Length: 65
Image (tube, rainbow, N blue to C red):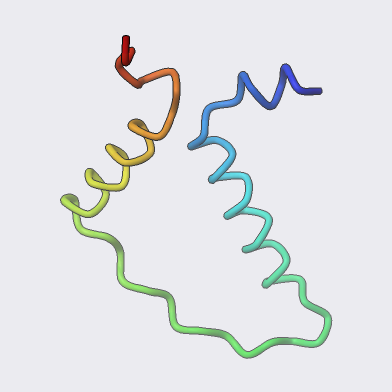
């Protein structure tokens, strides 16, 4: 199990968690009120987020020594 965790890229984990949250919201038996969807991120915001994700991944970090 730890091998799967360590080999899975961070964006895939984030995508899976976002999907699970979306599923739970849509299948809520008590019918939570619908929220307005936030506006789509601009290209610059998306690029900044991607760069932050890649920098946090040990696979893409530069060696410190």
